[in-house]
View 1: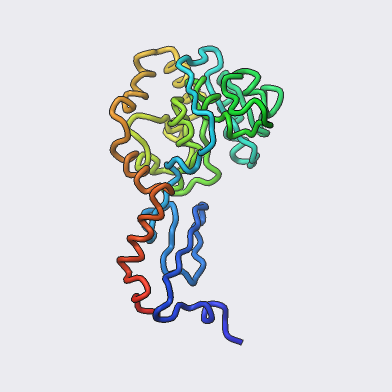
View 2 (view 1 turned 180 degrees about the vertical axis):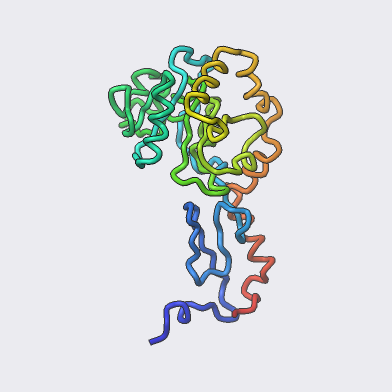
Length: 256
């Protein structure tokens, strides 16, 4: 019996095959001609920075920040390592946790009780993503912890916080600055302890000038590495994939 990979080999004149894997492992199918992942080293990059990862939301953003409860967190995939990290930091800071993991607000839809203006459609059952940005915008900081610490694996968790107007406290990709605006996030891995990080966050919250510096990039719009991440997002993938197919010659590309 012929092997699967042999049967699936592309023949001369056939369309090129593209395969996408945006998960941390970025595993190839073995039969694709063009491989799409979050990493710039692969054939076509598709970052998590675009709008398609957060459609159908209430984008009302609060002009006021909660000065008593500093940190927003919401996670419903309770991975042990992430829970442990979150608990160690959130235990030192006033926070609201809205997801299934370490929930301290009394339920999964309490964001709408606290911020009724964040409801997207009062006549339909709420979904957690409907009010995500609006609720997050009420907090000075948002905790963003990736599932996996992997180079260039910077997911929507971080970009949600940036879009909402909160300052992300980030744990994840070691090269995160390749994807975000300058001086826009707090890289939690750069602190020697959670106590040191918590002390920094509290001091920053009480210093209007220093806190405003984390938002200075917003006056300039999308620029620098953040501009590159947005330009390489899922939003622009169809056109960039067509360009990759064209560079390879399309149906005229030689089959191997």
